[in-house]
Length: 488
Image 1 (cartoon, helix red, strand yellow):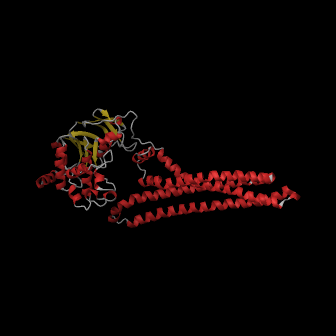
Image 2: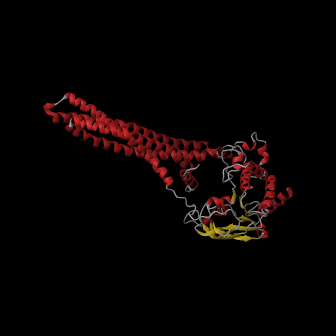
Image 3: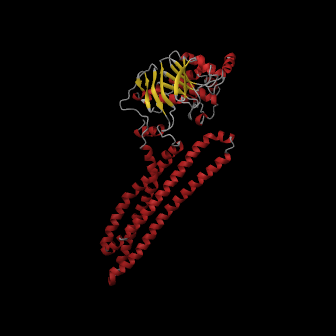
């Protein structure tokens, strides 16, 4: 059963700040968490036995010779100062080492999945130089950390030996002619056993200093409060009709920049199909993200069945909205696991999986795989083509059986036959679902009951004839549409 820490970690990952590299987060959760665990273990494993030994040997020294004990005690502050100074330096070096390793992890996380882009753009040499630079900095910082860890015990021992020399000189002055070699030897033995736990304390302190930067970076994650989160009074809706209203919605990604969505008003009735068109980068996908509460608008609000979506539980809201992105994201696992990913119980209903795959035209390539729906598709679906990934993404949305279906360029990687089959599926879904189509392909756009144009952050409804008169500015040109219809 998931713990509170699991849910906290999930909020940290899914609600992470824009610009925070995924590789950096992964490094904090894995490698740096191990460093913190090692530091905590070292401190806890040291504090009890060394404390007992310190008390026992200190008592023995005082019993043998109180005057020499006072002289020996004067060495302890010197050792403490050395340990503290070097420990602070180790902390700074460890922080630099953690940052350089996090940068290297973030770089590898970016470049390894993008090797096709690197190769086709002849970027191997450039990436090799970047890797060498980051790896060299990481190696340099880690060697510096290892050197400092090796230096500290030697510095403590040097301080200890110097303290013994001072002790011997002081003992002669204090003892005078009553010098007792046997008693002095016993005292030195007790002193050696007294200094040993101090050295152990120093090592534990330095382990803590080494792990302190990692602890701070992990706490930075736990202190992060996602902007989008449930209100305590958020409601759960067992079912929705699919009536959507945008009321004066304004949103900008960066403060001070022109709004991507500027005062948008839109009413999508339950069971209606609407197409959103406009220039690339004009904010069409942003509207879908606002509906899914991936972001909050700076002003205005969005209502679902007359409920402000900020008053609806996030999990409930996203259960009722199926979203198919233009960049289908699949996970390492089987085809069945990816199609059934949206199941809130985590179960896989194979009948629903096969039905969704059949509707999305994904069963054709699945059946020829050796293990069928139990076939592993690799990291991010690396063993599949772009069209196959998109069909699985559509199958996932169909499996979810939500009241609202948002298609964001969902047919961009499909061939004409697959798109025609999907069109037939959508025709059936439109009777009982609210469908939002974000597309540039005319055949998909003209399936909608209404067409709205988002341009310059402003939204306005246009007629079919007005849209066609745009001469392909925001969709396939009319002659392309004619050819496609003729081929169909």
